Image (spheres, helix red, strand yellow):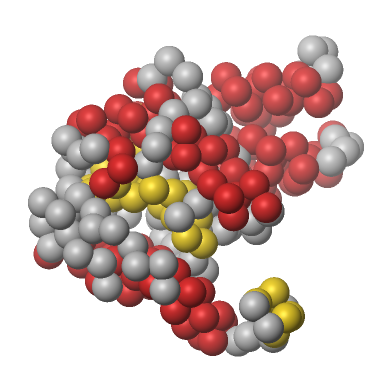
Length: 251
C-alpha cells in the first residue's frame, strides 16, 4: 500500500517502480556530473547478512532488541557502532566478544557463498555509467581492506574511479566527511553529484554534504525526515538506471 496524491493505492513491484520513476522525473532533475555509491545495502545485500549473523549471536546469548540496534547502526563505522551498542546495552556489554562471534558467522557464510550477493541491478547500472563516461566513486564506512576484497571478489572493482572508506576520514556518517572526500576525489561539485544510499545515516551524510541523495531502501523504509532529505526515493537500482538515463550528464 502506497500513499499517493489520490490516496492509498496497492501496487505490484513493477507498478510501484513505474509510479516512483514517473513521480521523480516530473520534477525535471538537473544534469549531473558524477555518482557516489554506498556499498553495504546498496551494492551488496550485506546488511541483511550482518543482521542475520547478529541475530544468531543474540539468540545464543539472549541479547534483546538486536534488530533495532543494528538498524540504528547502519551506515556507521566500527567505532560509531561500538558506541551505539555501549549506549544501548551499557559499558559492560562484551561487544568485542560478540562482534568476533558475529564476524565468524558472517565470513563462514561469505566463504560458503563465494562472496556477497549483489543487489538487483548493480552490474547494469555500473556498466551504463561507465559507457556514459560518468565518474563513479564508492564511499563506504567499512575498512578499505575489506571493501577492496569484497569488490574484487564480486569482480566489479574496475567500475569505480575512486574508493573512499571509513578508515580514511575522521568522522563517520552521518557526518558528511566521507562524501565530501569522494566528491573531491572524482572532481565534482557536490551539487552536481548523486549519492545512492539505503541507510538513514548515509542519507543524512549526503544531505549534509550538499550532494543529491537518492534513497534505495533496504532494511528500513523512509520516514518523513528521509523524504525531506532525499532528491528522490526509488525502489531498486534498475529504476535508478532508468532515472539516470533520462537525465543529461554534465561533463
